[in-house]
Structures are given as structure tokens and as C-alpha cells.
Length: 216
Image (cartoon, rainbow, N blue to C red):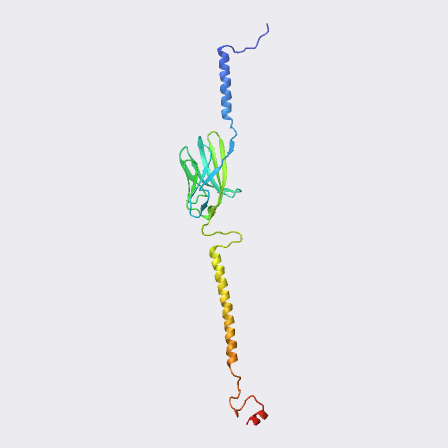
């Protein structure tokens, strides 16, 4: 009699299915799942800032299951890390680009106080969640100098005053030269010729001997 293959039946079938399902879940949990990248927007508050002001860079997105968030400063080709925040233990780690004026809150918002012109740069945030989702975004911060306003074809008030003062000095110099030359010409016209006789019979040092004898 030929032997038939044994197949689990009844309770054994259920146990086999449970073992297969458990092995599948265990293998799935051991294999690393690829992370998902999400681009987020960053809002600047206030929209425009000047030297000495404060600014907040506010990232969009949910804070649910957040593992860490990091802020960077750079020029798009190379970024330098400013600060890292880890909500699970509420710790903040400041990095090499930290200047002492940056701070981060529980919502991963970056705050910069007492802004300077050197703070004008690109800023980047990276958020990692517990389900291996990576969110990132970039924004540009422009800090204006309220004491300087340069535009094409327009001078600042200080530069305008400087140009006007330089023109006034040059004009005064030329007027002084003209006045000095005029005064010299006037004085030369009023002077008599040297040796000119004031009365008849006066010797003339520049006359010829014949004229001297005739005058004598």
C-alpha cells in the first residue's frame, strides 16, 4: 500500500499556521525598513528682520513620535550643525555652529536673538520619528542693516552729505585762487615804474647818457 503524505489536521493545523505567522512577523521585524523622506516647509516669524532683532524659524509637521530634530546653518553645499533636541529625554546638545544666541523649544522651533549680518544664511532642519520617517526642510534668512541702505543709482544720506561737502571744499579752493590772482594784478597796476622821474631834472638811472645830459 503506498504511503500518503502527512498533513496536519484539526488543532495541529492551527498550531502550524500560528508558527508560520509568528516566523513571518519575526523576520519582518528583523529586516530594516527603508526610511521615508518628507519635505517640510519652514515659516519665519517675523517675515523681515534687521540687525539686533530676534527671529523664530518654525517648521511644519507633527511632533508625534518624534525621536530627534537637528538644526543646521550653511550655504547648501555644506551645512554645520547648530543644535540637536531629543524629546524622549528632553535633552539639548549644542554643536560647532552654535554662537550662544540660538535656542530650541519643545516644538523644534529655532530662535535666534540679537541678529547680526553674519546670521544671513541658509538654515536646515532634520526631524527623525520613531517609525523611521525623516522630515527635512530648508529656508533662507536675510538680516538687513537698518543703518545702511544701498541700492543701485541711490546714495545713502551720509554719502550724499560727504559728496556735497567735498564739492563745497573744492569750490572754495578755486574761489580763493581766483581772488588771490585778482588781488596781485590790482596791486601791480597801482605801482609806479621803477626810476620814473617825479620832477624835471631828476636823474633817470635807466636813461641813456644823451637823454641824461638833455634832461640835465
